[in-house]
Image (cartoon, rainbow, N blue to C red):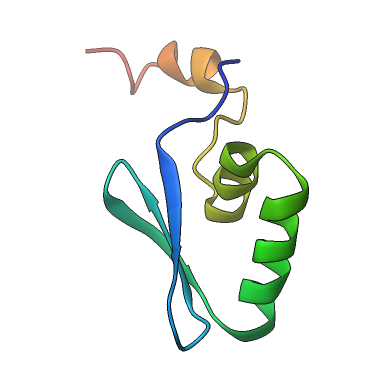
Amino acid sequence: MPRPQGFSYTRRADGTVVITHLSRNAGTLRGGRAEQFLAEVESGDAQLVMARWTGAYKHGNERIARNHPRSRR
């Protein structure tokens, strides 16, 4: 599975954290969740952490879903 890429985050003056993926809003965190996110980003791989927090990462079932009858066109 390829590593996540294209994520960035902005910390606002009011403590809100906005996570973007390829310049599109992927999530907004406030309060304790924002603080927890910032601590996790500083201690680990930032791209992987942002992918996990936004849910925008591959789950491993993409190949199976591609072969499903409704997905074939």
